[in-house]
Length: 178
Image 1 (cartoon, rainbow, N blue to C red):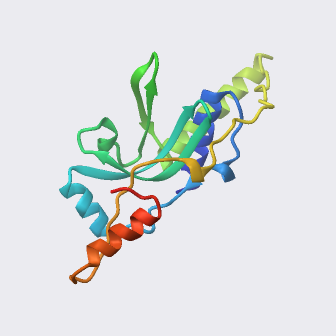
Image 2 (cartoon, rainbow, N blue to C red):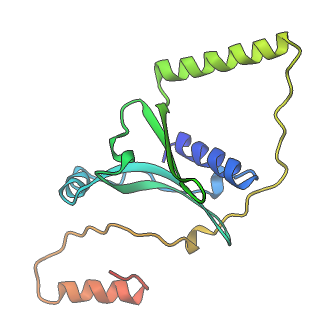
């Protein structure tokens, strides 16, 4: 996952949970281990693959993950691409809400930085500048070893008797259900 994804997850988690998040504590997987075949299979099954930063606030703490994710082709996040980024919120009482806007890159970043500079300058000029309060609490995170999620598993195997039985036995012995 890119630095931007971890940073986005940190900011969202901090806003939702009222505490800072150390980016090193966020479980992160990039897309470098994926092949074109993964994208083809996803499409065949009705999905697209997106690098998603997820924050779930649970009773035991926040689950933070940045990873390639299968997104159903009809989901609103599936069509977000190019220079656009999206934030999808789901919960009570909000139910569902999505914000879409320009992400990183030449013009969007320049416009965002310029806007921030103008706002800061106008606040200083009006003697209105107030530093942003720093949160002194840290958000309680769920250890990545205890985060449960669904996974896509693709294997290239020899067409031999007992091959599938060996695979399912190995998965079962490691507590992985399919």
